[in-house]
Amino acid sequence: MSRLVPATEMLKKALEGKYAIAQFNINNLEWTKAILTECQALNAAVILGVSEGAGKYMCGFNTVAAMVENMMETLNITVPVALHLDHGSYEGCLKCIEAGFSSIMFDGSHLPFEENIAKTRELVQLAHEKGISIEAEVGSIGGEEDGVVGMGECADPEECKKIADLGVDFLAAGIGNIHGVYPANWPGLSFETLAKVKEKIGDLPLVLHGGTGIPADQIKKAISLGVSKINVNTECQLAFAKATREYIEAGKDREGKGFDPRKLLKPGTDAIMETVKEKAEIFGFEGSAAK
Ligand code: 13P
Image (tube, rainbow, N blue to C red; front, top):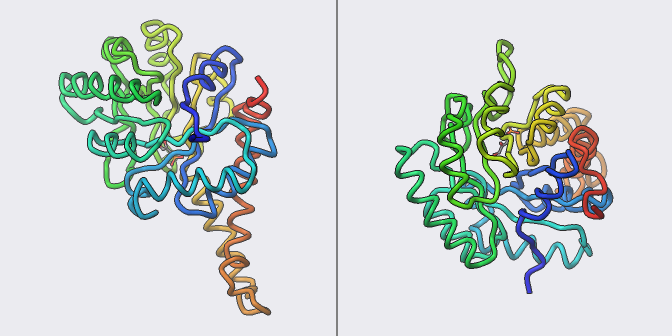
């Protein structure tokens, strides 16, 4: 029996409770352990995001699913955990459904709209037959993610309604958000678009991609307007790299057995746990497992 749960219920509760669940992307064993351990300490439900590139890096979706399942057992993780494909292709979605993921995202935002509709419709049915939750995307998110470059569009609310009506469990709508570090001249989130999308889709939880570097006041406003899931990846990468660099620059890898990967990667892992804690405060997800 899988320990993983679909993300549907945790996001429904977040929408009602006016907070957001975090999707933290995982890239290796250390990150996964850090995020699960910290979320358990915060008694928080969590979504572990896996991009297609990260899945490949971690030796395939079967390996990832087995790692997360076994880690949950060994670490005695009892908070709700969803294992979610991030920005999946059609083929990637099929693979993750087979591999035992509990949630998928089909990103058809770069396809002609009718094709996005047709493929999303098909995947909704396949996912729901297996009790898996599914996210879809309208209006591509800017920045670069695994070689896919979006221009930070604002989604068309009518298109959002059409995709929502296919029965997806949550929807990523572009509102000027972008992946990675925001440029200095970034105009901020389009709350006007967000409000219009919300009006069209009603009680469907909305997803905000590109959670790194959005000022806390904009995050809180987005949550108040119906965002219930916020994705964070780059911020963990930056924290991990900075802590590792400081460890090496301080020469600690040359002291005793400081070069041992278990020591070398510990500051970075601790930095990820700190990032999770900071996000818990801004997104309000601490204690969400008990809600
Ligand atoms: P950041 O890398 O900007 O945090 O965005 C993550 C994300 O949206 C993954 O889908």
